Image (cartoon, rainbow, N blue to C red; front, side):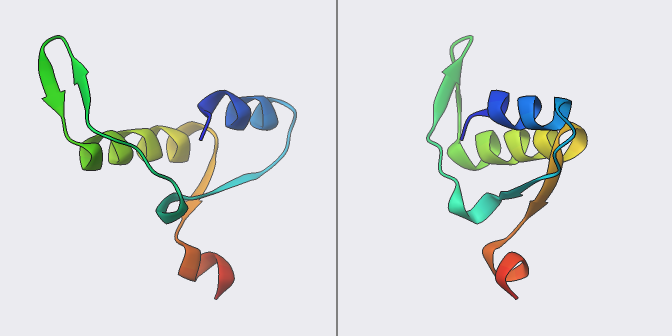
Amino acid sequence: MHRCNYRAASDLGYKTTIIHDACATLDLEFDGRKVPASQVHATIMAALAFAYGTVTTTQQYVG
């Protein structure tokens, strides 16, 4: 997933949908602190939902 793609689409007026359970990440480290993948995922999804589009699950999208 590339946040810049969602931003560009939003800037051009397109409505975007992010299917969050189809995205993956991994543990990251910042300033000497390990950040678990679940927190990385939640943080990125929250930012995308706030500024760039709808965040949903596969079941909600298909259903």
